[in-house]
Each structure stands twice: as C-alpha cells, then as structure tokens.
Figure (cartoon, rainbow, N blue to C red):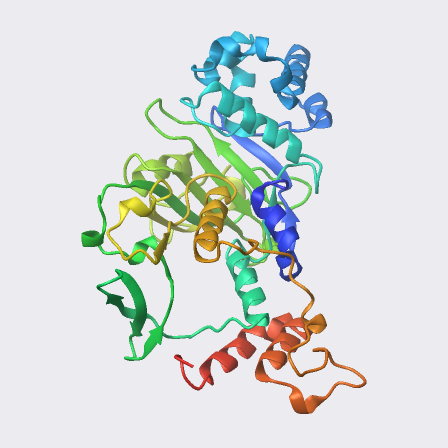
Length: 431
C-alpha cells in the first residue's frame, strides 16, 4: 500500500484504520544480471549506494528533483507527450543502470508506458517517501486479507448482518422492471433486497457480453531465508524483476518475514505477480529458478553452505482473472445488480476503491462515501442511554448489537467467535 495512496487515506478518513496494524516495507530491491541489489530511494540512500557511480548519483538526484514538480517545467517533456517513458529517460542521458532503476523500481511501469504516466508514477513514489518510513509502502500485519476484514468488522459493529455458511442459489427478478427483488439461498430461504452486489467470478458466461479477459500470473512460495540477507531477518522487501527476455513481463515480488504475521518463524512467505503471457508456471518459474534453489529430486537435502540461494520449501502457481477493465455494459444483468471486479495487477487498490465508491453512490446517491465513523460507545439508540460500560450503564437495555459492539471494542481476538454467534442466532434471514 502506498503510504499516501487512496487506500491509506480512506482507512484514516473512515476510522477503519483502528482495526488494523501495519509494518513498513523495509527496503526495495531489484534483480539485475542475476544479482539482487537494494534500490536507492531517498537522498541518503542515493549517496550511500555502492551500485551507482558518483556521476550517476548526481544524475539520479537531478532527475528525481525534476520529477517532484515536473508540471512546472513543460518545456522539458512537451516533445515526448505521446512517446514511451523509456525514450524520455534515454533523452535525459541517463545510463542504462539508472533507466532500469527508475522504470522498474521507482515508477514501476512497463516499457510501453507513456511519458506522462511514467512521470506521475515517479512523482507519486517520491511523495510517499518519508510519511511512515524510508520507503513509500506499508503492509498490513496478517496480510492484505485484513483490509476487507477491517471494513466488515466496522460494518458489524454498526449493525451489519452477516449470514454465515449461506450462499446465493438464484435471483428473483421482476420482469416488468428488470430488477432483482429477492435472492434464494442454498437453504431455500428467500431474502428480499433492493440491490444486489456480486463479485465477477460468480457471473456465468452466458450473462457476459464477452468472455475475453486479461489474466494475472501468481506464484506463492515458502522459503528458508531472504533473497538478500541483512543484519535484520525481520524485513519486508518489495523486489522488482525486469523482464528476463524481451517478450517476458516484468515481475513484482513481495517477501514477507515472520513478524508480518503471515508465516512461521525461520521462514519467508513470497508472492510473485505479473501480467500473464502464458500459464503462471511458464511466466514465473524462470524467475523462481533465478532467485531460489528449487529441489528437483524428491528428498534431496543440501546444507545452507552448499547453496547460494534460498531454498524453496513449497511453491504454488496459479492464474487469476483480471477483470478490472470491465464495466456494467460488459454484463447482461438486471439494472440493480452491481458487479465488482477482482484484483488487478497494480500496486495499491485505487481501482477497487473507485469501483466501490461508484457502486455506493449508485445505491445511495445522497450519502457520503465512508464517512468518519463515531466510536461505538458514543452511539445513542432511540430510547437508550449511551452505549458504554461503566457506572450508570443500564444492562437491561443491552441488545445483541450492543454486546457485539462492546465485544469488538474490548477484545479484538474474540471478534470472529462473537460474530459467528450473533449471525448464527439471527431468527430469520428475511427479518
């Protein structure tokens, strides 16, 4: 997550950030010529870097200073508005070394990215530096799955109802208005609704205008040590790997240590992502082989001293649909069905946030999107006193919703059990 990105701003604005904890991405790395190196981000990193010559350091600082307010100097780039960012970097007389650093590890764009988009990406990277650490990025403890869970938790505290172990079997559509008026779940219960929000993967092919879509290649690894050992073994690293061949995609890798609460002590959890040009294994296995020791003989054991690369203890390759370019015109569905696309291949969650805000305003055009939430104990229900514990609290009016809110505030570790209990004892889904 970019420290000044749309997701962090939304978490702070809505007070959802109170339900999450974060860890800084400690370093940004790149892989060049088979060697993993640290990318200089800040001024101090640039001048301390051993990968750059003195001349390159000056050239890089001059270019990064220009990017911070490039809009004030249109004469520098106006001849390149329709040309690739890479060509603009060459025109600036930057060395191949610097071009790779900027293109893949700072702007994090492709060879085909246009100049203006590349400058904006570089500027965004620089403006995120220093807000919470020496790199522009944060990572939520326990993984990115915590982020939707935090919003669900906020919703539950303020009265949202979750029907656990239910899934939707079919929709009940009013032919006259072409709107969904209810859903039937797998237990045969009918639940009335005014709107129905659904993720793209639930949509059948016959309800799509086109079945063509892009794909993302993913790999998940468990390894025994970091790709670049350092004094601390508790660093989260973002690694950018330029294309190994001209036709191959650039790969982005996140290496998570055990203090990120995503893996066991003594191991690292590694995610690799790129746009698909083939299967995930075809796209990512060459990169895995470049950076890690992959045993090809079952039961083969080698000592740490015998190998120069981290060992892969477990690996999984898979492809995911990238439906972020689709919109409502891509589906043949009732007018009050709102389709949310899955994750895209970019860093941050800007696409998802824009889509969520668009769906929200379609359903509730006069309401503010994710307004700051009050503290649960400050809420006063009709006919009740303030929802809080302590002297003067009337336990006789303590409803299930209030108990749930209090449980969330007092003991986050017990929240899933509390939520299960409330959801399972809801008298009726329709009610």
